[in-house]
Image 1 (cartoon, rainbow, N blue to C red):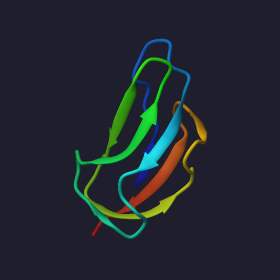
Image 2 (image 1 turned 180 degrees about the vertical axis):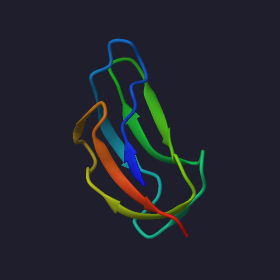
Image 3 (image 1 turned 30 degrees about the horizontal axis):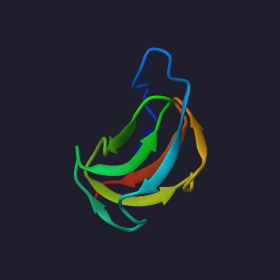
Image 4 (image 1 turned 135 degrees about the horizontal axis):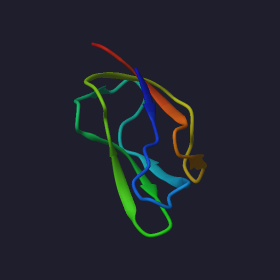
Length: 77
């Protein structure tokens, strides 16, 4: 499953990845925070959209990411 950066605010167009909370290869549970992002106004935790294994990340810390961009992959366990 692809993990995409959602739009958290009406005017939000992008966000900066602060840090990954889970490393590649780690098990994740749906709803569990997996990354922290900073928008124009706030810091937000991105929750996993599914349970499984975090198999790939496509962005690194301090990267600016557009809304709707694929940032990671989760494979069902």
